[in-house]
Figure (tube, one colour):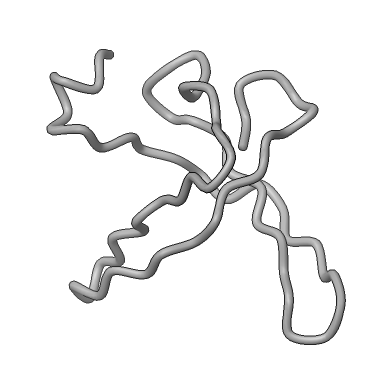
Length: 69
């Protein structure tokens, strides 16, 4: 599914949470509708749209796993 078909949004599933230093967590997301996410560039972020209407922003890191961020 192309980003233009989804209004620029990707659907993802939370696969894992890793606890880093105090107050920092890393969330591993895997795509639901596409085979892989677009490449991540330095300074990239994602807007997470929650069911209750809140939008949270998170910085992105490239992943070593196929198709995940």
